[in-house]
Length: 215
Image (cartoon, rainbow, N blue to C red; front, side):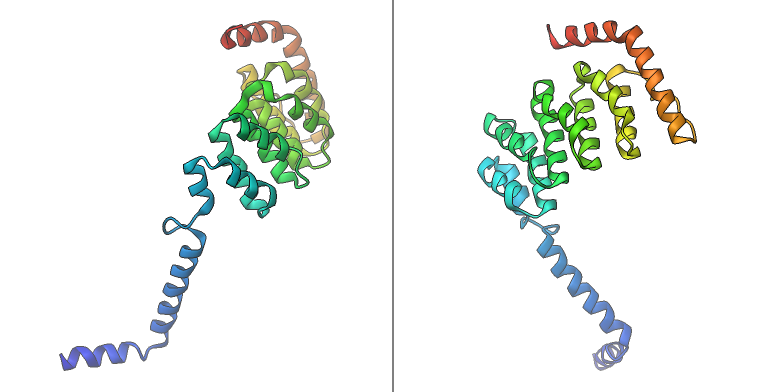
């Protein structure tokens, strides 16, 4: 027992032992505060209990990150009140919250909620929000707004046109269009490609979509 106590005493005299202990304690505190270690995550609890009013309050007045998490949680609730909150937050002053809310609307409400997304795609000042609007149209599988997506290929921001390509390909059931190392050439080719494709195949794709919708 004496040898064991002496060996422990010697170990704790080594500096690296103390560094390791400090990091271990700090890590435990961080996990506790961030909610990764258990049930301290208020947003997760609200989502689990479908607390729309609580999530709405976080979405409106929380940090940017928490607001985005709250609107994502509201997409899974899918009640009329949750949809109403998402429509409100799609007008939020913060671009990430606007965009996240539009994607959440696509997941919760589908195509009938996507008219504001088309407006956001063409008018929003934030490239991030415009890209999220394009993603929302793709998530909603909304063939009615394919012309709006094709027009958005004129967007000067690559983050937007990349997402527009993905959404167009998803809606039309095809691979993304032609590419080029020259952005201007690539944009011109993409617009020409999708305009020709939609003129030829748009009626067939639209009919298929409408039949899938049960119309």
